Length: 123
Image (cartoon, rainbow, N blue to C red; front, side, top):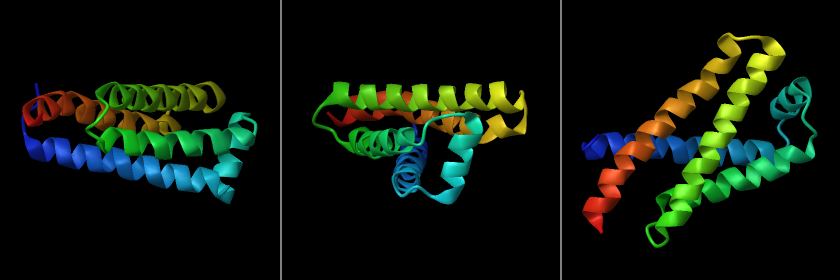
C-alpha cells in the first residue's frame, strides 16, 4: 500500500488536471480532438459526452462526502483510458500511440491505490 501523502497529492492532482483539461478540450471541440476521434472512428457527439464525464469525474475524485461516487469516478477513468488504449491499438496497431493513455492509466492507478490509505486516515 502506498502511504506517502505526496504520492497521493501529486498523482491525484495529475488525474484531476488531465480530466479537467481533457474535458474542456473535448467539450470545446478542439480541432486536434476532433481529428483524433474521427481517425479512431467515433462519432463527434462522443466528445461532448466524454468531456462532461471527465469534468464531473475530476470533481468526484476530490470530494470527500460521497465515497462511492469517488469509486465510480475512478472506474470511469479506468474504462475511458483502457478503451482509449485499445482503440489506438486496433486502429494504429500496438505502439507509441497507446503510450499517453497507458501512462495516465498508471498514474490513475497510483492515485486510486494511494487514495484508499489517504481517505481512510482522514475520515
